[in-house]
Image (tube, rainbow, N blue to C red; front, side):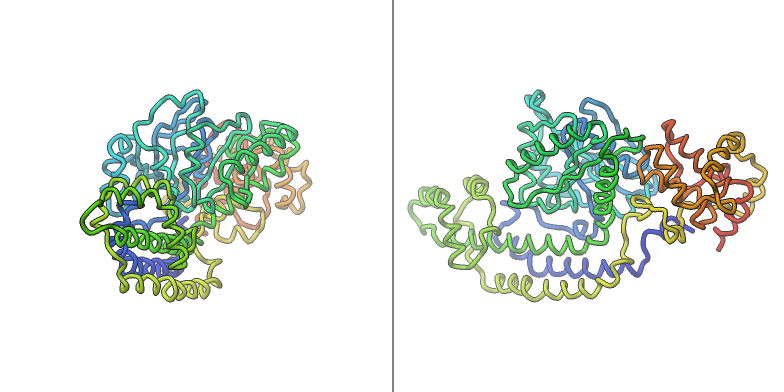
Length: 545
């Protein structure tokens, strides 16, 4: 059985692509002509391309340095990736896009921005200073088959704010915030600090709070009293910065694959981790909804922009005092926004930031602006009232199929000890016929440690020669390894997929746990030399079914 079969099937992928193709058609037919007519791209974001519709869901990981951004990504992937560095000082000095590829390779920023199949073509607007600090890492990791991850440089603290990055860091963050599906903002429970650059970074996320997930990381390193104080301080600080009536959800966790320190809030950390990973896991299922939401948001923004440009055009004199009138209109822009809201019933939330709009208007020639074109506005209204409504109905019809839509490898993040999880185990060794005899003759590397593993096995009181999942789980959790790691070890060890472990399978599980505690990475598929000899024939025969 191939691991890719566990992700999705062509049929369910087709359901998602139907909506995506319709969105693409509506954008090119109805919205893009209006954007070009009123020079929307000169004031706001560039036009969308095919790659913006076709790309996989993206997760942007950001935070101050040493909050565990790269470690968080390694925790999701369960392996290192090219160029990753971890340390107490700023070690990630560039934006890194982690994407799926059949072979490992690192693509420089200037090269990736000319690839029409990648959603990064418009990043060339930020110049070589940024592109020299941007790279795409392709690696054959199963998690990246359905999502892409963006690692960011650590946000500088107050002590380091005098250093210049050489590019507009806030503008780059906003470019990614507009296009990603999730923004993971990490804080360190040990050093909660809000620097000037962090506050400016929050400004780049304005309008995209619905994508934001805040994580208070390394929570197992503080006691419950300290955690309560840090959590309260973080909530208070976030409330001052974002100024929204809704309270941002803050997840408490310790996202790395090493043993956690035992603390009073250990179970809380496990539950919070499961909630966050569930959210990330479901991103591919909700990709079509997110793209639909972004298109509607952009269409309403374009409509407000068209009314602004048309008003300024009509208010300009034909011949004399053009420059004076221009500056007068820019100064009165807040009043103009109010007039447009009243005359055309455009909601205030659809308008751009007034101060930024005034800055951009200073360098524009108002005489080149276009008046309101009724045919384009009717087309835009049809998009918002009829076309989008039809797509919403299509999505509702597919709601019953949602359980079969692709998700980020369920067992990878939220593997439990329920038997139904084992019916499609993607981690079995794929042995060829000519390798079976060779595997049978190989010595089982766990054999020499089996006596001490058997002692643990029999102390847990097996029934009919096997331990139930409940008993094994209770023992496994005493190792303080994260649940996702233990679940992966269970999947590797339960070779016959019966939801229980015999003495050989249990010995294999303990051997894998000890290896993980010693700092080794777990294999994604069980190597032949780890398969118990009594299980090798049945395992190889299962893979041929």
